[in-house]
Length: 164
Image 1 (cartoon, rainbow, N blue to C red):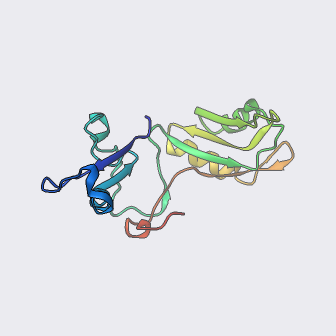
Image 2: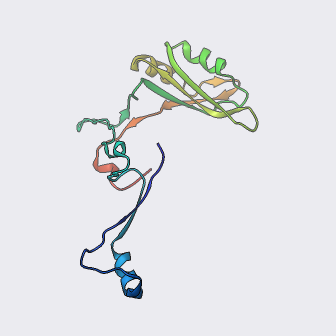
């Protein structure tokens, strides 16, 4: 979706904004101007932007731990050797369950692996088994680190105002 710039002007009906009013008229006009950028406000020209955002409700009793994504349980694999191939990662992780999706990004300039991959499993049990077995395992003579891609926060209070 494209970002929208909107300039809202609230003009006082009693004010007379003609070319003769000079600087005072311009100052009064500027007081009523509000510039808004992005998608978080009401936009009469594009009503689809006025719909509420999708969100996932978290349990108030939830503890810190792995969080399921919309599709499945995703593991974040780091320290992947630059010459590794998707097949190398797939073969290693397929021993612990059926892989639903695998993302291994390549550097555009060099064509080598960027050093990380995302591996998705359908069930928590499979993802947990792969994480436990493969964290600090060797792949192409290099130790990889495996952890959860999404982690549930401890409470809503801890997220207020600060970004990590």
